[in-house]
Figure 1 (spheres, rainbow, N blue to C red):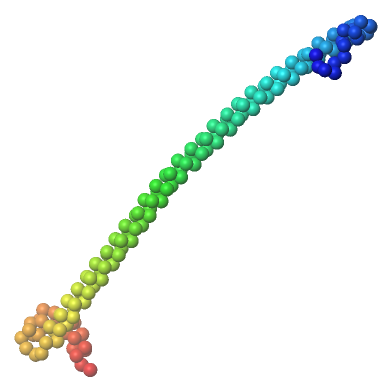
Figure 2 (figure 1 turned 90 degrees about the vertical axis):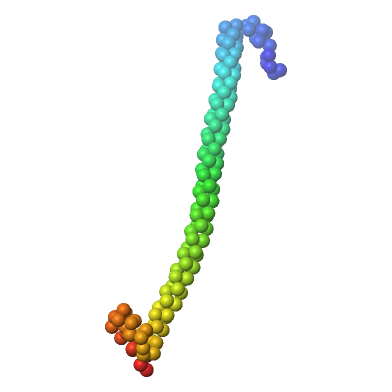
Length: 143
């Protein structure tokens, strides 16, 4: 019994308490039992929901971590490929510049051969080069 409970035995000695008090006490016990079961159910439900929330949070965290690892790997690959592409571009540019310089040098040597003083080598070049280039060279020679 609770500390502030009345003495139900004394109260039940008189009518109408003899029939109503036992009904009241039985109803109160049932209500307390129902409250206890409800509290237990709520605690069980809370524990289940907490477990689901933790599982869901862990799943989301795992997905996030997996994606981040993959994204970091892809980023490193891209950075590496950009560096390699830049290096290749630089090498190709250098090769093109060297080729251009070599072609310019060859072209200048050909122009010099064509511009040789009158004589054998120039006449041979005139025959092999054709009139188009000689016309260009002649226009370069005359001031």
